[in-house]
Amino acid sequence: MEKEREKIGIFDSGIGGVTVMYEIIKILPKEDYIYYSDSKNNPYGDKTEEQIQKICNNIVQHLIDKNCKTIVIACNTASSKAKNILRKTYPKIEFIAIEPAYKMVYDYAFDKPTLVMATKGTMESEAFNILLKKYNNQKTYLFPCIGLAEKIEQGKEQEIKQYLKMHLKIYQNRVENVVLGCTHYPLIQKQIQEVLGQVQFFNGAPQLAKHLKNVLKKKNLLNQGEGDIEFEDSQNLEINKKRFYEILNEMGKEG
Image (tube, rainbow, N blue to C red; front, side):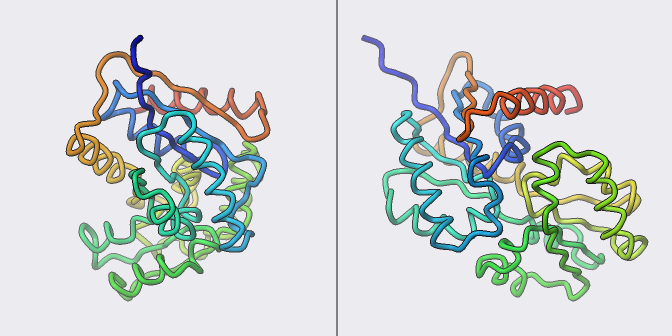
């Protein structure tokens, strides 16, 4: 009997992690994936650290039961609040965690004024503040985008445009870099540019994908053959499944 192929598990508080998955698939097209969208508990940003850890633990256990060899935490809030305890709880599983790409500003555009867009939970986290303290260019504005990820999750295009116009206008002509500190935000880069003009975007997904490939290669865990994508939603919402595949296909056309 042929052994079942091991999968890469990817989870987020919604469908925003599709932006991470897309970057991974680009360089690892032969892998099998299971994407878990936790719409039931969305958003994570308004939950306590203990609540987030419990939610993430349940998801990880489910993904392990589904034969996942590696798990990608494609949510900045979950990453900052739960990655350490997950690694301690499941030492045999390799966790690859997304982080706000603030260090990339330090590496590539250190002297330019920078806007960091992230959820309140991410900005308040110890992990992000360590990153900020270490790489601060002293020209950085922090904007906790309360409620924005939910609007993106629900596809409320008009509300998104109004939100960005209302909150980002004060940064117009003041910033050149924008750190997208939530996996939902790359989905609205064009709308952000409409308000801020030609800015340079930084997000952690491409670097995460490269790191994941290196880890799998080092551990001799790379798959061969045709890759497969499975989508799960914690509420079994068909509309989320539909939007997930639509966004993934659209990104493929654009990329």
